[in-house]
Amino acid sequence: MNTFAFSGAGIADPLQSGPFASIVRLARRLFDVPVAMVTLDGTNTAEQTPWATADVRSHPDAWAKLQYHDVCAALPGLTAFAAAALRSADGAIIGSLSIATSDSREFTPEDLQHLDDLAALAALRFQAGAAAAVQAELLEVAHHEHRRSLHDALTGVLNRAGISAVLDSALASGRTSEGVTVVVTDVDRFKTINDTLGHAAGDDVIKAVASRLNAATRDRDAVGRLGGDEFLMVLSGCGDQQLAEQVAGRMFESIRANPIRLRRESSPKDAHVTLSMGVAVIPAGIACRPEDALELADQAMYVAKRAGRDQISVVVAPKVDAA
Image 1 (cartoon, rainbow, N blue to C red):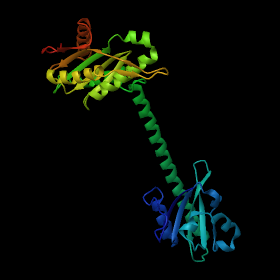
Image 2: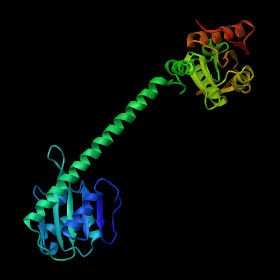
Image 3: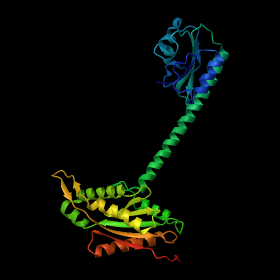
Image 4: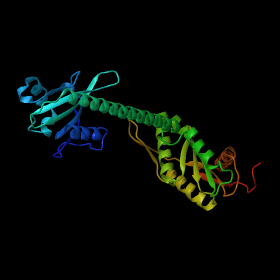
């Protein structure tokens, strides 16, 4: 049972700032009672039409409804009581608006009409709040689905679409004010790992590589998996070759410094993994299209491979304007 109450003694008003706060305060003033209460899901006190009793203890049906109700805790000396139903848009009773006092009192038909009007207002507020909650939930689901659409299911880093969007954004201005570095890398002899240790072990390697690359980057950098064992990193605001080599070197060493533990059902194995890494530095003020930056980094990676793997190759974009 969810209850929203207002009492003169300050008892039981958990949400005075909630959707029903002004309504229960208005009910208290309008009927000059110490307690007004909106109860959701506690429909045992609500009837199709508003009802009241001058003395609940002389009204057996009323006392049977109220003896376990929150109103008794809010007003232990409860005597007079009245309630009107809150209804959903389809007419179903979803709760009640009730008022109570310790004095014996006869509530007039006009009183009950006013109470019914307030209950209708409370129901409208509840429905508006419920609609807002549903809208918020739908937005959250949409956000979650959008996030999933940009992240790699195996590793949790950005997927090809996600990291490509980051690259496009980083180079969208044509000439960047701070520069950008694009890093492409893959795992040396990854096919051998898959063939000898199995695809599950290969997945372990991919996940560990993604995690270590991500941990080695700066807050403003982004890591994405292009597919298979190939990764793309975008280092925003990094148009300086020395800084680019430092960040790339940190990522490179994070993989080769320690073996990757493969936790299979049989005895664990260690895989010693290295990378071939291509680094393309786009200095500040240089115009470079995303596809051209990616091509430069790709070419640099293949230079590293041809030189024997397990190394970094760096290229700096030429300081000429793109056509």
